[in-house]
View 1: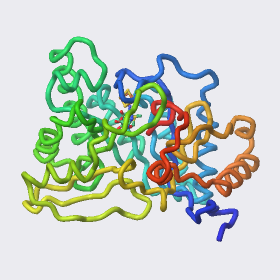
View 2 (view 1 turned 90 degrees about the vertical axis):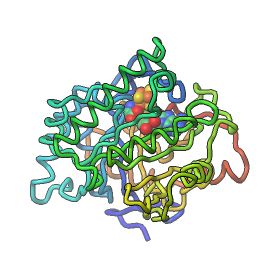
View 3 (view 1 turned 180 degrees about the vertical axis):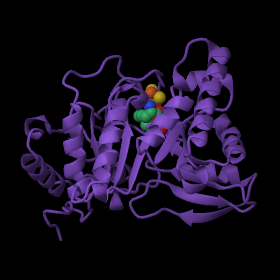
Length: 347
Ligand code: SAM
Ligand code: SF4
């Protein structure tokens, strides 16, 4: 059943997670993502972003994930976090319902000062993306010119970012610091075991993501997907794993290393879709709401962003009409359609 305070969509899925993109730009150029060089005109203002988050919390959102493009490029990030944190401490503010504020970043710009400032501003969790453990591969995956040397430098920056986050109090043991890696067959599949080894050494949970057909620029082909089952099979040849399953509304199917080496997860949106309990609403930096990562079109929220009431009504209506289950349909019928770009949507 749907109520005004907690709408459900046509498949009875509630709203639970808001992924807000702060920019479509990036300081890297991963070829599987292909970010924009410039931001769209009419970026949301801080007040509009806050209104969006506040209204979404009133409709059931409990997790806010800030993303991009590269969110650390946005000068809005800290002020936004600070305002969200104020709201979380103010009685009767819907922001009090937020349980979790997370950030996805490539980690390049994450230094000690930045990490401490994010922590102080109320950020709960950081996920850092890193697709390779050796220089040449890291450069290729990030779209860097300069070969292995440029990749080594990138690796150093990202590892320094990881350390800075840890030192600032983002504790991987409490799930506050994780690694993401996209694995592409024939491109960086040789990095799989090195990435697992690196994550185990760092005592950080690694999430291995199947290469997804988001956007139109990356020339995605199914044969470039290394399935989650294959990834787990390859890891199991080296370490014994115990399945932990996937939490309701979660994206990763998780496995525990039986030798105490932590946890590894796989995000299998191509081969094992999890549309059935998808609770994620994505909002782009210019205020387009997408109810699915693979949606063709967004819903323009800008005309209603000046009024909490109008915005609430628009989100309730939009969510109630939601019937997306693209990943499941892809498996059933291979639909061919255009998608919005990943760096615009924010992952
Ligand atoms: N720049 C930040 C980063 O890289 O973490 C945040 C934005 S990025 C779009 C969010 C996540 O989406 C990253 O972990 C990235 O690896 C992942 N991603 C981008 N394109 C993808 C694709 N085609 N398939 C699977 N994951 C992808
Ligand atoms: Fe940038 Fe993240 Fe896209 Fe890579 S995946 S180009 S780091 S937005």
